[in-house]
Every structure is written in structure tokens, then in C-alpha cells.
Image (cartoon, rainbow, N blue to C red; front, side, top):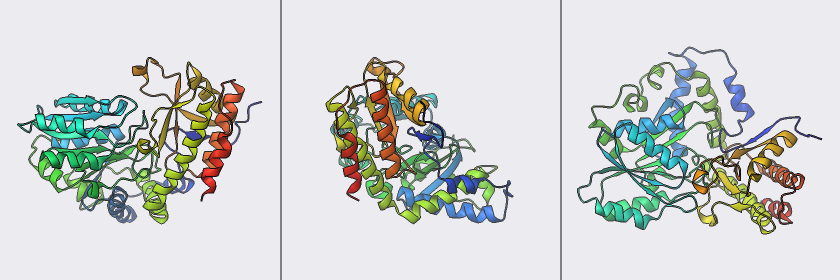
Length: 398
């Protein structure tokens, strides 16, 4: 008998679960976009966004998804023919590289596969070989949503500094910001991009770029940046119309204001700790299930796993079978096995992902794990015993 009636749980790695206060804040008549309350709200947002990114520098907002932020960041610092180095640990590194190629950049990729983080030594080799310093920027994913690999921005900054290379360090933080610890200024990241629908807990439609003075100086020498993508006015607007280069995303702005209130009331350190503990509970259960069945975690080393998303293999078409069962019978939607073609599974049917980002807590995660185990029982997929008790033990540590 299906038991899916009631509120569904969207346990995919974005869009994440939207808090009720955020949705309620958005449920208002359209406001005046030129003056009044929204002007005060919008001027309060950039400083609070910068606190999430841990930067004292600049921030700009766009009406776009994460792909729009990729393009905007590249548009500001690159001219056709400029070279970039993209270090890839999954599908989204390739996506950002494709975006750069579409803008006329010369792209060099170093691909570390689907299970391993970036090796800074290999990046150092490439940078040392670039004796003419033609590489203008190094692009990477802090967390790749398809593989759940978490990379180390500080290690890449150390490599750039050791080589003395002037390339800008650009981080895709779409999956990580507000979930995994990210320290833009302390770690030496020049440009970071993110979007609203994951750790920031706002429906899809807004994206953000954070950039320091080095990146600003490079952009100021680029005469080809389009008026719309140009981050200059957006980062220092005089009135609300300039924040978005035109009409504001009014209802998203109200939702974002509420989500930032929630984020800073909890505190960034507490948010990172919550995500780390809930991720540990999920990993513990999945590792035990794998001892008696086909389940495998994509990333073997806990130290380089994301605290926001976990990518898993279940063999054959079991990933799709499990996803279908949990949604139809328990109201839990698991993420698809994105970017699995390289593993010989073009549709990703043998894989699935768990999103545990943003507005999640212990009872949600423990319920999620219980549903996954129920699904494997129903589908007669073998698994190791004791996973749920072990996950509960992790949560009980407080």
C-alpha cells in the first residue's frame, strides 16, 4: 500500500527544501520596484550575502540560475582568445569549460575523473609550463554536484602563489555555499559564484558573484563586457533598479531576505556543523548497507566528500528502481545519477544521489534513511544490517 500522502520530501541536490517562512515572505502583492521598502531590503542583502561567502569585497546579483552566474563571471574577466585552465572533478567542471568555450576562450582541461579530488601537484605542473602566463583564470568546482567531490580552494591558491602565477582563482560554489565551509578571503579565492536554490534556501532564479579587488581590476580592463552582465553597477548600486540591471526579482528578494535572516540567526559555524553531522549520519548508514549489498559511495575518502550531496551506486538499474519506489510509495524524491555516462551507464539508472543541503535536520535525514532501507527491502536489493541504528548513534552525539 503506498504511503506517500502528505508533504513530499524533495531530497535531490537542488532545488533544496524551501523553508515555510521563505515561501510565506514571497507570498505578497508586487511591490514598487523603484523606492520604498524594497530599496531598504535590497541594500541590506549584499552585506549579508558577503557574510555567507566570508568576504569583505564585492558581490553582485543576477536574475539567472547557476549557469548564468558562470557566464557572467567569465564575461567580466575574459576576452575572446583568452586562455583558462579548468580543473574537472565531474559533470559541472565540463559545463563551465563549455561555457568558456562558447564565449571564445581557449580552454585547457585537466580531468581528475569522477571519484578523486583535484591533485594540486598536477595543477602546479600545468601552471609552471605556462611560462608566458597566458592562462588568465583557473576554474574549479568547490563541490561537484554530480560526483559529491569536495575540493580544497586553499590548496589551489597555495599552488598559484608558489608558482607566482597571476591567474585568477574562480570557484563554483553553487552546491557548497551555505552547506560546506567556504572562506573566500582567507582561502584566497578571487571569484566565487553561487545560486539561490541550494544552501541559500530560495527557489531557483537568482545567482550571485563575489569578487575581490584583483578580479575587479582585471574586469576594468575588459572593454567587451556586455552592459547586462557587467558587475560594476550591480556591486555598488545607487537605487534598486541597478541591482539587477533592470526590473528587480521582487518576490525572490523578499524570500532571500528571510533566508538570510534564518542563516545568520543560526550562524555559519553552526550551519556547517549541522551539515557535517547529518552528512556523517548518511555516510555511516550507506557504508553499512554496502557491507552486505551492492551499494557504494562514489567518494571513498570521507575527508573529500561534500556535506551537501552524496552520490551513490546501487548496481544495474537499481538506482532508478529505488528512486521510483521511494517517490511512489513514501513521498521521498531522490536525485538522479547525473553525469554517469562516463561509467558506462548513459541514463545513470544504476546510480542515485541524496541531497542534504539547506533546510534539513535530524528527523528529516533519519526518515530519509528509513525510507531508503524500506525501498531496498521491497525491491529485494541486499544490504548490510544495522545501518539505521548506526545513523541514529551519529545523531545522538548531539
